Image (cartoon, rainbow, N blue to C red):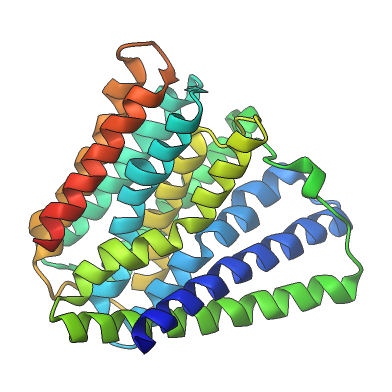
Length: 312
C-alpha cells in the first residue's frame, strides 16, 4: 500500500517540479531576452525530459540500472504507443514535412545508436554517453540553423514575466520537487517489484515510464481540448530523441549503466525500435501526412500488446 502511495506522490512531485522548472525557464528567457527558439530547444526540452533524467540518474547512482534504462525505453514506447495514440484518437493531426526529412531519421539514428552501444556488451560506457551527447549537440545546431520553424511555442499565453525572486523560487522548488519525486518513485517502484516478485525492469517499462510520460500526455490532451493541434508528432519524436541522447547520455556519463535483466535486450529494446519504425508507414498510409483515429487505435493495440508480453 505504501509503495503505491510513494509512486503516486513521486509522480505528482515530478510533474509539478517539471512545470515549475518550465515556468522559471520561460521567465528567465523573457528577462534575459534570450530567443524563444534557443530556450525551446535547450531549457524547455530539458524541463519536459527532467522527470526521466532525474529518475534515471538517481536510479543508476543508487544501484538500480534496470530502472534507469527501463524508464527511458518504456517512456519512448509510451510516448508513441500511448500519448500519440490518445492524441490522434481525440483529434487528427497534420504531419509536417520535417517528419521524414529530419525528425524520424534522427529518432531512428538515436535508437539504433543506443541499440548498438548496449546490445552487444549489455552496458553503456562513459565514452558512449559522450558520443550520444555530441550527436544531440549536432542535431540541436542543425535545428537552430536550418529548421527554426519546426519549433512551435505551444501555449504562448502562458508566458508570464516573473519577478526575479519568483524565478529563483520556481527554480529552487522545481529542482527539489524533481529530486524528492524521483526518490519516492524509485522507493515505491522497488518496493512494488519486491512485493509482487517481478523485476525492477518490468516496473520501470510499465508503471514508471508511463508516469514520466504524463507531462507529455497532459499537454497533448490540453492541446486537443483547446483545438490548437499544438502537440505534433514532431514534439513527441523530439522528446524521444532527447530521452535517448540526453537522458541516457548524461546518466552514463555520470556512471556507466549495466543491464541486469536481459529482458531489456531480448524484448523491450525491440519493441522500442518496432514502435519507432511503425510511425513511418502510418504517416503515409492510408492518408498522406495525416494521422487520425484509425492509426491511434493501431498504436494503442501495439502498446497493449507490449505491456501484455512484457508482464506475462
